[in-house]
Amino acid sequence: MDKRNYQSKLAKNLTLMGANELFAALRFFYPISILYFAEVTGSFAVAMGVYSCATITMALLEVPTGVLSDKWGRRNIFVMGCAIEWLAAFCYAMAATHFLIDGTAWLYIGAACFGISGSLFSGNNYALLYETAECLRQRHRLAHILGRNSSMEQLGLATASAVAGILMWFGASFEMLFWLTLIPMSCALIAALMTTEPPRHSISESHPWAHMKEAFHLIVQNKELRLLAICSAWKTGWGMSSHSFLPKFIETVWPVWAVPFYRLGQNIIGFFSYWFAGKVTDKLTPLKTLFGMSLISDGLSLIAFGVANLVSPFLLMLSQINWAVGNTANDTLQQQHFSKEQRSTMGSLISLLSSFMNAIAAVILGLFADHIGPQNTLLIIAVMMLPISFGYLSLYKTNKNAK
Image (cartoon, rainbow, N blue to C red; front, side, top):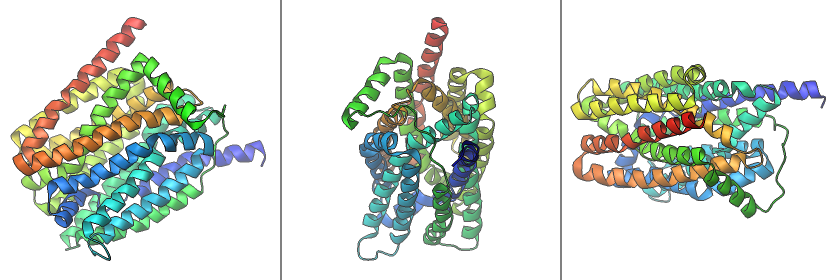
């Protein structure tokens, strides 16, 4: 294949990965998953344990899959992750049938599959985008590429929420939403199969354990990256657990059929936030963006859970700006600190810490909710998110003094 043709095929990666994000995000069960899990299991703690199972599985496989990506290739790992993600959705759908095994067992098998796919995507997909951009001489546009790619996920989730809300209005069951999700997930797998492997740069020939050890030392020795990883883990751990549980809180202030429309509004905001995240990050710098977005989001969450009325969901929708713009700034900073040889493995190590935090937080949240209710539990977690803003402020001051 001549260089011009290869470059043309490689350029399609950006479009194909965006399409993959869009189709994979068309999870019609997304707005009501916690309601379905609680219905099948009969407990908030066991239902949140499904999310915990996914994150624990992801945590255990984070580093091995990161090393595999660095050594076997980004595209191969990407395709494998999409296939296992499809299988995960299938297992979730089977939970309502209680076919051969208990519904809870189907949920936990599906969660384990989601964990495996998440570990394969973690570090690998951003590395695939980064190396594609680098080969196309668009590395200076990395924040824009990451933001636009992630915006496709938000668009998919928003579309899925709208469709789910309409279907539920006409009487569709939770189970039907899971089965319908398999159609767009099949399209996501097809998009992944059409991607092209970017050229390999300085592939490490070291033993996988030595490769991982070197990546770990690079993180520990970098003060800014170390603190960034801690803040990212805390934010992801408690933030993702709260995000998964939020429909139960929304159900207490809105009717159940309206819950998907909360997700719709949240993801529409997320789409535009991710779409313009690169411009915001370039304008303010990544560290200023992280601190400002985190502070605003903390304030909105405290008010929303404190008053707990019809307005609360609208305040929580706005906090999606922090997740979208803040994550883009965070990922941009991380990629700037990663080495070429350990790029995916370093990303996986940081995600490993986030996954452990998320697994612990999910179980704690479920236990608290069973005893003190959704509102009080989420209010406590909103308070626990406050230290993140101070961590970003410390990073900003350290960086400013260094300059």
